[in-house]
Amino acid sequence: VTLTRNSECPPVMESKADIKGPVPPPLTYFESFVAVVVLFLVVGSFQLVFASVWGCIFWWLFTGSSTPIFLLITMFSTLLIPKGYSEAFCRLPCWPIVHKYFCYRRITTPCENFPDPKKQYMIVEYPHGTFPIATLCMATLFDKNYDYYKSKGMSVRGISASVLFYIPLVRHMMAFFGALPATKESFMEAFRTAGCCSVLPGGIAEMFMVEEDRDRIYFKKRFGYIKVALESGVDIVPVFHFGNAQILRVIGKSGILAYMSRKLKMSIMLPYGRWGLPIPFRQPILSVVGAPIKVKKTLNPSRELVREYQKKIEESFREMYIKHRHKNGWADRELSIE
Image 1 (cartoon, rainbow, N blue to C red):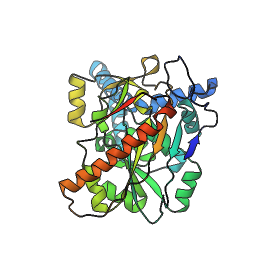
Image 2 (tube, one colour; image 1 turned 45 degrees about the vertical axis):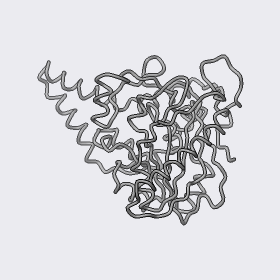
Image 3 (cartoon, rainbow, N blue to C red; image 1 turned 90 degrees about the vertical axis):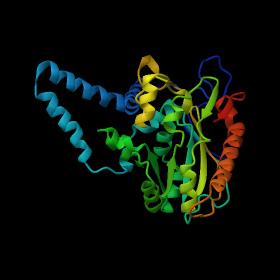
Image 4 (cartoon, one colour; image 1 turned 60 degrees about the vertical axis):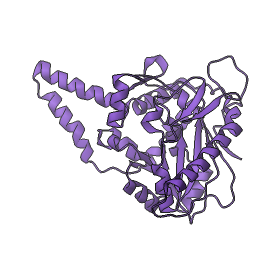
C-alpha cells in the first residue's frame, strides 16, 4: 500500500477527544489563520454570493442608490470571463496548510499496470458529505503519484453540478480546480483532454444523510455514471473518503430548504462548523483509492448489465471500508449503502 500523508500527522492513537483517528498536528497562529480564511471562502462561497446579492437588493430598495446595481452587474459580468483549470491555483501555498489542517492522507491500493497511460479511468468518489473537501484535497495534492501521472500525459477533471457554473465567483473557483458541468459531453471532454474524470454520484442527496455514528452513501439509485463508463469503455476506480462526512453540520436537513435544494439540484442549506461558521471541524480525512474495476465497452448497455457493474462497485466499497476504517479510528463504525 502506498501511503501519502503529511509527515507531521501522528499515528492513530487512543484519545478521549471528540475527533476520531489520527490527532491533527498543531498549527501555528499563521497556519490557523490561513486555513480558517481559505476554508471559509471555499466552503462558504455560495452563501457569500447569496448574501451579497440580497444585500445589494435591500441596499437598492431602501436607499435607491445606483451603487448596488453597479456592484451586481459587475459581479454577474464575471460569468463572461473565460474559465478553465489552473494548476497555479491548485499549487498555491495555502493548500498544504489545508492538508495539515485535516491531517490529510491518501492510500493507493497497489495494482498491476495501474495507472495505465494507454487507458482512461472514471474515478467514483464517496461520500460527498455536506461539502466534498476531500476531493479538493486530492486535487491540490502534488506528490510523486501526480508527477508520474503527468509524465504519462494523464490528469483528472471533476464533474460537478451544472448549476454551480452559473453562480458568480463559484463558477471560476470550480473551474480552477478542474471541474466541468455534469453533462455527458463533459464526461467525453474529460476523457479526451485529461484521460480521467472524477464524479461524486451521492451529490445533493448525501448532504441530508450525514450522521454521527455511521457512514451513509446514496448509491443504489445512481446508474448514469455506470452507463457512461460502459459506453466509453473506461475502467472504474472507487475512492472512499473517511472523515469527509464529519467535517460539517448542517441547518436545513428537512423542511423547505431541503425541498428547494432537491428541486434546484444545488445545496441552499446552511453548513456550519467551528464557531457556527462554514469552517470545517478539524476532522482527519483519509482517502483510499481502490483497485480499478475492468469495464468492457458496451454501446446501449442493458439494465441488467448496468446493475451487474453496480454490484461490483458496491462490493469494492464494502471491502475497502472494512479493510481501512480502523486507520481513521473507526474499527466499529458501519457503512450503510442505500
